[in-house]
Length: 593
Image (cartoon, rainbow, N blue to C red):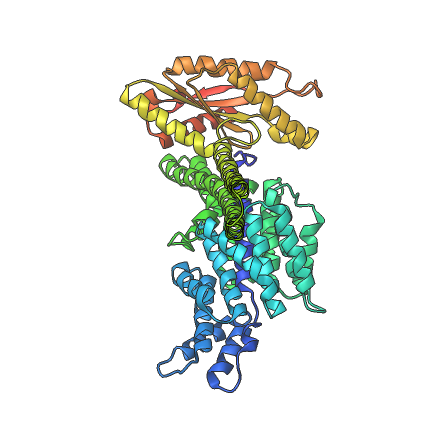
């Protein structure tokens, strides 16, 4: 298997943000309930329900049933609090269709500021998991503005944790870390620093460069364990286990996962339980135990019949594909491969969607502030005109000139904002390092090229390119040299490509190449020239001893037809043969029986 291929890391970064945000939304404690007015049985039951909803969840459910019994009389304030608890419970068990409208109602219409903040924070979790990123960031901006007005410092503390994790999911490291550090100021005297450490950790890993040996892992885990907050410790340990498996330490990952499995399952938090099974499947696969890998991957899928955790299933389908392919069950392998590629494509798309949503909301806020400023200026101009009505024509002309200047300034600002939006949309199509098409847009261009070729009855070749031993380059020379190798690789490839060819980066050190109007023999000639150029050209002048080679998998529509999944699967299988055959070679679909 090629555990070093770059696609899965994006989804894991999102997985950590989603897990952390979900835990923040659910682990509120009983702060808002403590403010419920005493003096009635329902108020007492509500207060108790708030206090035990995570520590004694079974008892909490019984209290909810008691509050919903016919004939129970609730004041308007108590009705809002019960509605929030119902929404919280839906979020806890993953029933987001039930939870979202309840929480949205409380966040938008409840009279209590602190209760609105709690509901808004829990709603942020659901919006992030269901990919409604733009609304999530809009509500996050409102929640951040409300923090100074929250009466209960515990509620403010929770709100900051949710804001930190949402910013981390958008890879906004600086604001995410700032919110996490602000949590420390709102912590009560003697309170554990578990949660601030976890959210600071979430901010630091947002760009995915934190190694598993970094002290923050052990610091956050030990602090949360000592504080008796296993859900937060599990969040970090699940991430640590995955990183251990990814860096070639599957036995250490398995030991960690087996140790925390009883705690994770006992908590009943479905996101963690799903990720635990996904991680076990991946770690067993890396360790070479295909039977246990398949068992745990299927166990993860069985937990999610409604597809609520589809965004977390990339590793699950990858393991099932690898196991089926190794066992020779190519029909099942192709099916799992399609799911894997679909989830991977959505993962890349989600990463871009989160970033785009964040910047869109920021631009909308800037535009809104500009419009308010322009309105204020305009009102000032009107007042000035009324005051100077009796003055001479020269004064009137001055007023008109001032008004024109204000309007021109506003127009220039709007033009700059529009240009910024267009520039961002263009950048979203390109890989930030190499400048070629990113994964999502490479697939879109490939689909278009296949449709045109099919209509014209022309042949198309698809090549998958994977640099050999690229992880050793990063480990030996550093990531800066690794980036230079990737950029030089793209330059060498482009020297042998035609204007009509489609070239994109699929992730990490893997690239895709579509050759329209090209037979299998012509495609072989092109990719062989590229292979020789990579193998014979010095890559980095600073490291003359550094050489690089690549393995190629080539597929043709003449053999596979014009459907992209079949072409991708065939090319990927050929690439595997090239890797197994010694690397620095080209394999084609002609070898497929």
